[in-house]
Each structure stands twice: as C-alpha cells, then as structure tokens.
Length: 361
Image 1 (cartoon, rainbow, N blue to C red):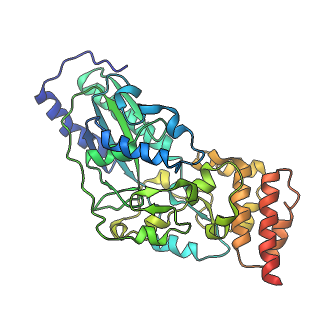
Image 2 (image 1 turned 45 degrees about the horizontal axis):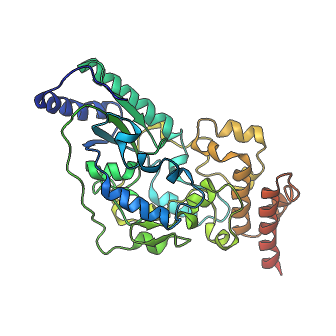
Image 3 (image 1 turned 60 degrees about the vertical axis):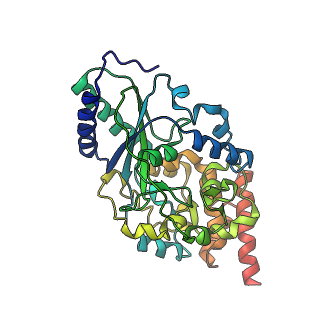
C-alpha cells in the first residue's frame, strides 16, 4: 500500500510536476506525462478481447482479474500514474526492411537486439523516484516495466504520451512508435495531462502488411496469429499454417511498425544500452542454428531473448531455415538436428527439410 507521510498543496504538486519532466530527461526518458487511474473504457476493451480468446495461451492476461485495469486494486493508495517513454530504434528502418528480404539472415525484433529493456527502464525509474525523494522526502510509489498486470498502453494514451494505433502500439506524432513504456504508480496528487487523440485516419498500412493477418480489425489484434506471439509467447509447436509467413523472423516481428507512415519521423536512438550486441542484427541463420547451449547463454546474457529458452530459439530458427533459399549448407545444418533430443525442435527441423525437398523435386 502506498502511504506518503506529507500533505501536499496543489501549488506544491504543480511545481513538482515541472521538475519531474526535467528530471525524466536527465534520466534518459524522451517523454513523460501523468494520468489519473480511471481506465474504465480500456477495461471494457480488454474484457471484449479476452472474451474473443485473442490472448491465446497468455493466461496471465486474465489471471489477475480487474487489477490490470484498476491500478488502485493492484497497488492500494495509487492516485496517479507517471508514464514515461524511452526510444530504442537501433538503426535506420530501411536497414531493417532490407534484412526482411535477405533469405539467409535472421530477423530479430529491433527491441531485443540490445540490453533487456526491463532492466534499463526499471533502473532509470527507480533512480527517478529517488530523485523525487531527495526533493520532497519519502512518498508512496511502485515501479513497473511490462512486469505486472498493468495496462501500460492505455495509461500512456490517457496520459498523452501518444495514441494506440490500429496495430495496437502507441504512436507519438513526432517520433513514431519505436519506444518502450514504463510506469511509476504513486500516491502523489500530481496534475494530469490531456489524453491524446487518434491520428490513424483511414490508413490501413499496418493491417495490410501484417504477414499473418493478425490485425483482424482496426485496433484489434488476435495474438494467436501474431508472429511475436508465435515466436515468443507460444511454448509449443508453431502452427503449420503460419510457418511460411514467418519468413526469417526468429524473435518477434516489426512489420506493422516498419511500414507505419508515422514512423517516417522516427530516428535511431543514441541509447548505448539498446545498441545491437554479438552481431545479432546481421547474423546468418545457419550460424545461429549451430550455437550450442553455452554459446546461446553467453550471447543472450542480459537480453530479452533469454526468456524464450534455447529450445524455442532452435524451433524458431528451424522454421526460418525452412523458408530460406535452398542450399547445401542450409540442408546440412538442418540435418545436424534432425534427430534432436527435443521433439519440438526435431519436428520443426523435419518440416524445414521437407520445404527444401519440395523445392528440389
């Protein structure tokens, strides 16, 4: 439960709000805004989404009941949410687009090329909270970065960070959508900011470009069809119907952002923590498939990729190799794991080999 020891006037909070915006810039955030905790509209949308079973095997989306859409239930005493944005695009979008057309290279969602964003933002938000404490003394707060039942996109939209686009990502009109979100739940009665309005208009670029038609309607994503879900959240076999469409995407998918017109304003981030590590931005599929467990652990240390485990990593690459141009190297590399001790990996390798057999015949 949040419990501040002091009473604050509106003047105190207005002054603190101005300083808060400045401090956020000092801690590496590109934008910050404050909202109240009324998410009743977002709760209705979440309920409809869950009822449609669009969350697939992500049972945690409904496990916590209304705590996700009612911040005061998750953290009693919460009055406001400070929403922050940190840009992460590590390279030009044209470079990423070209990689999607490269049949031998692996495509990893741009957010996962560098250090795990959970750790980066969480540390910065805690430092921000300490900065506030130095100014006003102890106050009640909790830090969240995609790690608890929090409707971060709805909170960001209500705070004015941006609007939720038709692809369900948050978009800022000046910077696009290549950014992470973080939240500071607090009992400080800070002045709130105005919510952002949608500016997608009649554009359907994200819907049209989605490889698996996961955006089933504007602002509605069926996660069960989404490549990010299939390669990250999904723990079992990737449905055969989606394997060809996955192409060379071995961890996540960025297509809906890469082809969004609003991202013409996006610029590569100077944040060193998000710079690509271990050459993962240009790695070849065959090389990655030959990693052993120790290599994988070493080269994914401190990365968000670690969460899927080595087995799913191999599963995903096997599918991408099945979609690659047929070469002797591709086939021989796949054959090294044709009898893998993991039935999950072996099944996807067999599928991949069959794709090349079909081509040769």
